[in-house]
Image (tube, rainbow, N blue to C red; front, side, top):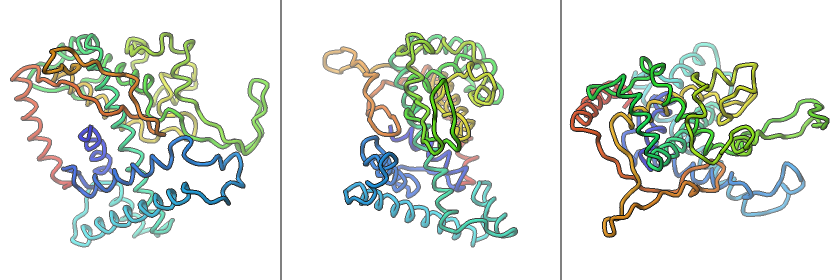
Length: 359
């Protein structure tokens, strides 16, 4: 469970802050996840009074205010410290290929369009948005693959036709030849979307929809979970069925940008002007993880060592937070063959060498 989070946090942290995360005790992982735990608690549905509907409630005291203040202070402390680490690195003449170094160079030359506080928190929020969300979806996909071995078998026929034991799948050259992997990723986003409540949108003018007035200033949400579990849109919606996406071979961004909104694959990344800007990275990350896991390993439900009986995975066991995540679970993971394992170890050595420039 932790290493799924470590992977996605490290990918986002490398891109944004130029810092690869190598262990669970790292400041970039441990402190960050402590912050995210507080943030998720503060944002959990029902954890706060309905201030948007009844603004007067913001003047009333309550523990929710202290929780919000704690979260804000932790964010400021976290991202100020992260910025100090970056400044110390750059003072030594070490610049890296990442977002923050690019912007620091640009703003030093052209001037600052925002305060230092806003800048630090902007890059902090990029990490906040890119870490837990993708990790939650990867954990959902591993849960589903272990629960439904027939899906693994179908995917491996596709994978093995392209990649033997000498190399793992690569997105850049294998995506078009492995459409079923794309279907699995999409179905995970539909079946258990981590942002199940969607993001708020503000109506900027009076708008009539289907005979109903939506007044200017109204806050609306895209009800992602409700859409994804609508029997008319997704028949047999509770079933994890990647086959439903065989007619959607493209990536989510292409369907989201299409004027044919009735042909959307899913709404896991939201919709409209506040659609997830990181969908391209997230979707490619998940494709790589699913393809490589299925190429290298067999996943299954765990077996009780005493009785020998299978311990069924509970596909309903999820938290109730604003970001949906499976509750801790166990799966059995076995290498498919000694040759597959040897290739994994070889690719690891190559990856470690490449990633060392961000450590």
